[in-house]
Image 1 (cartoon, rainbow, N blue to C red):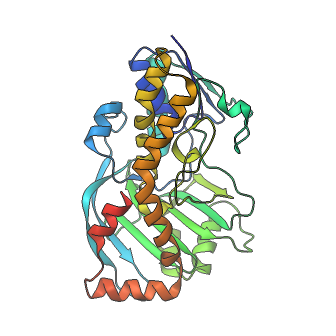
Image 2 (image 1 turned 90 degrees about the vertical axis):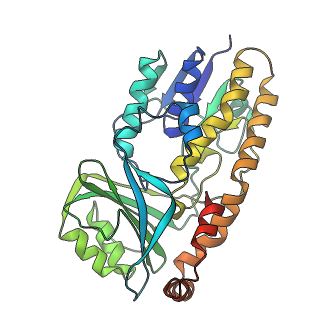
Image 3 (image 1 turned 120 degrees about the vertical axis):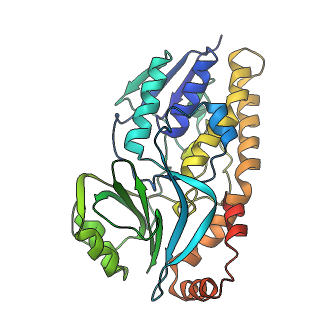
Length: 344
């Protein structure tokens, strides 16, 4: 039986490792970080079907996740506009979810190496095509990117709804209630010349983007300084790029965070790779065919949502288009269900 090696212990890597171990496949997983740890993430899961949860047996890891049914859009100069989500979303921190998945992987006999960085060329090299090696190491870095992601957990913060989405100048910010009566505040910002450090940089970015009221709300609450994290030099995809080897999760394609679909896509990419990898591990297919089958499945599964989110992403960031969104929302002409279906 062929063993599988997974590089990256995020949602895609861990859930795939767990699924493979349930089928008796030897799996070694290398994670550059450790558990538990905070990650820049919206920490709400939209578009994850019961079928995927069952296929990957995620019920245990998702135990206690909050169920979110509404989202309040905060548009510039407008009262919040509340929309019912076509399907409930789940609220759970990565700090807890990743730890649960890591513990589950180990309990199933998986070999987990933390603080272990595997040398790899993200542009695709002979090393990237090593048979049995799966790349699920997270975001591809782009040095010319203008985007900065910031995240922090906050207590004693009252929300209009379980989910809030705030649009500002060259930014949007999501607030999602998670476990332990905390709220995850996570935003995508165009980088600015701001000198603050730690959680205060998030407040500075909010005020610079015209979101002073939100900054004041957060400043008046209890900020968990230890939860603050940031990520820079990220880009988003309009399709699954052609790549050598097998790449899953954000390593395969990264969707703009306003969709709330990034966590679901990580799990779904693991699900798409499971059967091809089982065939490879049992000697039924060659590695090249395994990678090709997985990439074809990812492209078919994610093509529409990546293209749709890529088209909508700049609209949410520009004041002119934000005003049109506000008018459409006020007139109840925003095709929310159709947009949701395209993005999920």
